Amino acid sequence: MKKLFISIDISDDLASYLEGWIGELAHTGETRMVPEENYHITAYFIGYVSDEAVPVIERRLEEFVSRSQPFCLEFKGIVPAPPGRAATMLWAVFKNEEKFSK
Image 1 (cartoon, rainbow, N blue to C red):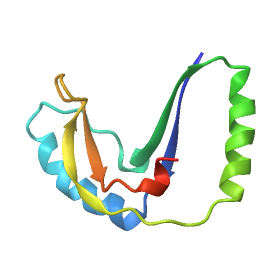
Image 2: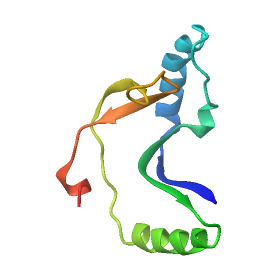
Image 3: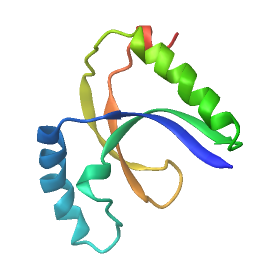
Image 4: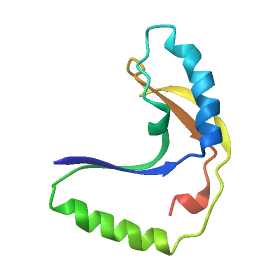
C-alpha cells in the first residue's frame, strides 16, 4: 500500500520565503520542519492504494497534466493543521476557485 497525493511544486523563490518565515517557528520546539526541498502544495489527497494501482494512477495523471493549462493561485494565508488536533503541519490557504471544483 502507498499513501498517494497530487502535489504542485512551488518556485524556489517562494520556498526560500517560506523557509525564512517558517524557520522562526522551529525555535518554539513544537514543530517538526521538513526540508525546504520538500515544500509543495497538496492539490488532492488520493489516499492509500495498492502498489499495483500506482502505475495506472500515474499514467492517468500524466495524460491529464499533458492536456492542462498553466494556472495561478491566490494566496490567503497560513494555518496550523490538521484541524481539530495538535498541529503537525502548516497549510497554505488559497482562494477557492470554482474551476478547480469540477
